Length: 297
Image 1: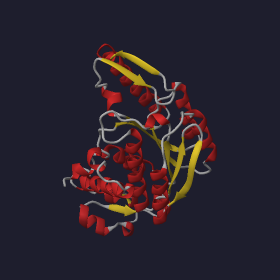
Image 2: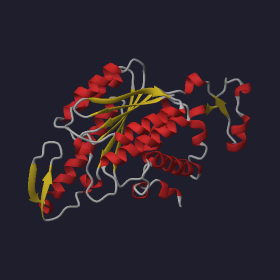
Image 3: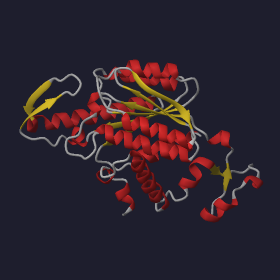
Image 4: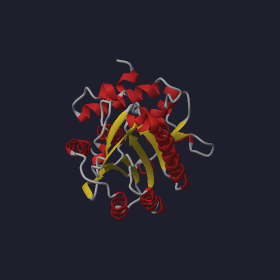
């Protein structure tokens, strides 16, 4: 199986167990790093940093030099650990797919599981918070191997249901956090009021790092519908029948504008914004995590 196959949602869909899905994604991702211009990145991103003049030469890691032909200083454990939270949107709208094998929720939990696997393999503490109209599960960050089993068990049992109370839940999460953390949010961000997104800015104001994984279904991005079509709002159960051919252009422009505005607002508040859809390979999101980790820690 090629590296790319490990990262395709259509392949991951064939694997039933979430722990094996996570291993497949991470294995494909790390193999891809090894074969790419980022060769060596998987070594340096957590345990090492580049040597700079003034560093003590005795701290050089010669084993890394032998593999990469570059000079790296091994960091101390206190420098490398990140306190991470996977924050998962369990609202009903996440349980949707049109023609892809994975729903938005399936895609999000697979990505979250892969990130948890990657973090714990690097001894980074990671926890989980779920929400919809209220806070659901809350698992404090740990870095032990048993934490991965606990986290995957909760993700495997989670089911999308109910309406989104996004702002209320994010504000509750902000109040729960006592230490600086890396918050990884997985949501379709289909909000009744876009101003609800402002709740995220409270997290960055409090000193937390935030990555928003904006997960949409492929059909929500490309609008492949034609003719008279009935659309159902999963959370309000409102129905709308319209001529898809006539509204396609307006819809695609609107969703592109919405994502662009989200990206701009997140950037203004030092939030990493990662637009995804359920047809995309998982490596882009994992690379975003590694880049943030390398830049900040």
